[in-house]
Amino acid sequence: MRTQVGITLGLCACCLLFCALGYWQTTRSAEKRVMEEALEASLMSAPTPWSADSTPFSRVSVRGSYDASQMFYVDNRVYRGQPGVQVIQAFESTSGRRLLVDRGWMSFPDRQSQPPPPPSPADEVEIIGLLLPDFGVGFSLESRRLDPRESLRPLRIQQLDLKFIGELADTESQYQLRLRNAEPGALTTQPFALPMGSERHLAYAVQWFGLALAAIIIWLFLVRRHLSRRSKSDG
Image (cartoon, helix red, strand yellow):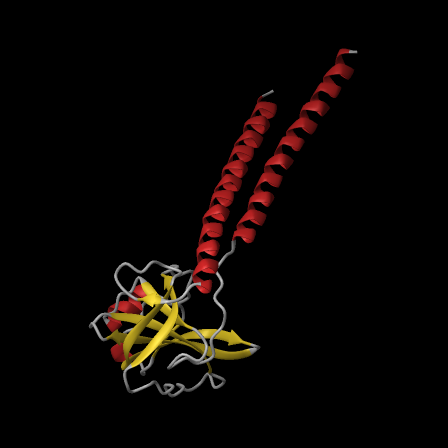
């Protein structure tokens, strides 16, 4: 009897957990859908001047100059099967405000040497790009943050950590400006996609709800088997 109660409680706990995870994934799917709609709308709209009121996923324009002394390589970026780096550089607007600019991908075939920094426009330019928020830093094998005084410049890091880079470059680290093709200073650029789209979250939700259903089916099977054995013993 105790075993049956324990199994029932365990399956109920699993079912509730799976349902909660499924609901969380559906919520995340709805949030990502709102982001995707905002992104689609911004890509179709005219750029607006970058300001403190600029919102994430909006197309903005900013006039200023690149800071050649503050360039960073985000390592392990593969494009069309070729190894490379993502080039992030500080940009100072004519108003004196600074932000990070994602210039795009650059080939880096020789992993034993530091690639030379790509040239950046020396004059004042106007650039247009997509204003992106900080998506956070995932798992990293780095045991500590790199000390720029111990490393070659441009500083090479394993993951895009906007907060860390922003502190070093003295920029507004919560945002980055992702350049479009043919913009001044742009390298090999790629269309932006959210780290995980709404459809992926929805697929995870279906999986979690499916596991909850499986737990219910297992419980019903065990109940039916118990009742069958009980009826045979009574007979």
